[in-house]
Length: 214
Image 1: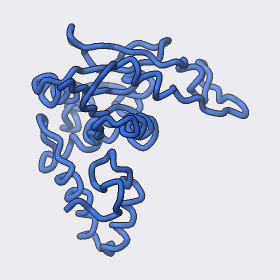
Image 2: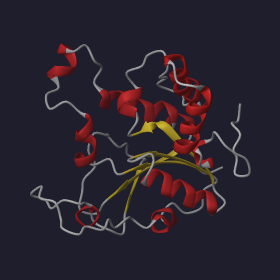
Image 3: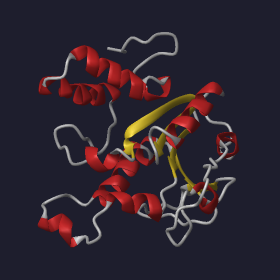
Image 4: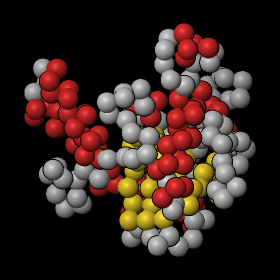
């Protein structure tokens, strides 16, 4: 079985949004530095379990924050970061900007024949979701590792929840539903969860029902 873990767009512009400007602040605030943990997760969750690790990049950007191994593969989008970004390289915002998304089919075609696909990277409700749903519609067994999307940078700090070597959708759902204990009504929490994670690629709902996979 050909299994692939596809990580989208690990570039400096996206990653640095979630990092302290100075690494010394992690020690000062007693917070674990995220990037070594992210690299360890990819190793233990996927390389060590027989997945081909693939990184998708814009052709005008280099990989950042992740150390690829010799057996990893890098594929490229059909659009540049400049075309996809709402700002110019000098930081000024483009007028009348319309985002140009990478073509999902173009990326998936570079993977060749695959039986199982796990998607991570930036961003969980946008590009990750788009490519996951495209793959699923192609008949590929596809899921999203929510832990290893942009949500990683908040989730990894929770020792009670986060596991280096395993992603468990049921554990994530239970973790999310702890908001019920903060006074929110169950019906509201369920509705919000369905709104965010209703797509079958997240593993909480089937394609033909809106009931939780409990």
